[in-house]
Image (cartoon, rainbow, N blue to C red; front, side):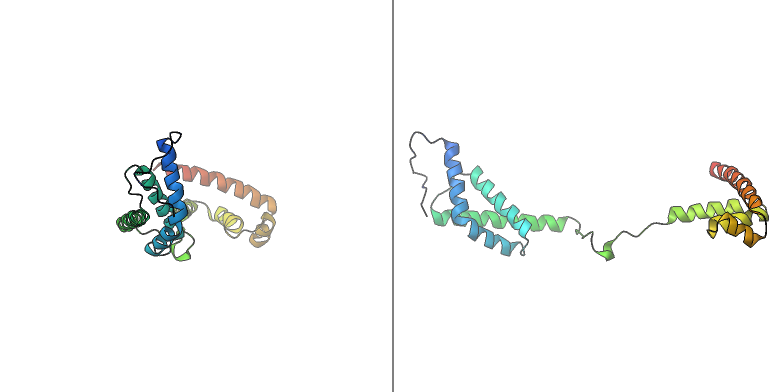
Length: 184
């Protein structure tokens, strides 16, 4: 590895930001593999977290490029120390936050809330109590059991037209009753 010392003099054509970019390229080329494997171990083999830590370490090296001792052994030690501290901070932050859970896990899946359906059923059954039994029977056979008008007529022993008219009257009465129950 080519040592880029602090005392190293670049020709007049190099600007300070070019020196920083050159340093980062050098760090990435020479220390990426070592840094990545060390951080992978420290993060418990979390690939994404490791990549984030390596990136943050190189950003900090770039930010401190004017003060870094550029002897290879010192650079390696500095990079590994910074990476280790970033990982330690990450572990501390993870302990401070609530446990993250996978959404795919069936045991953590949200349980369906049937409260609205239960409440609606309660209100409707209360309103149905105020209907005449002939209207209750028509609603039961069509809406609650799912029979067609023709099937309800056969079951109840009345003409289809009577089933339709009773259904219409029952629904109108129910709407009115539900409106009154809702305003209470």
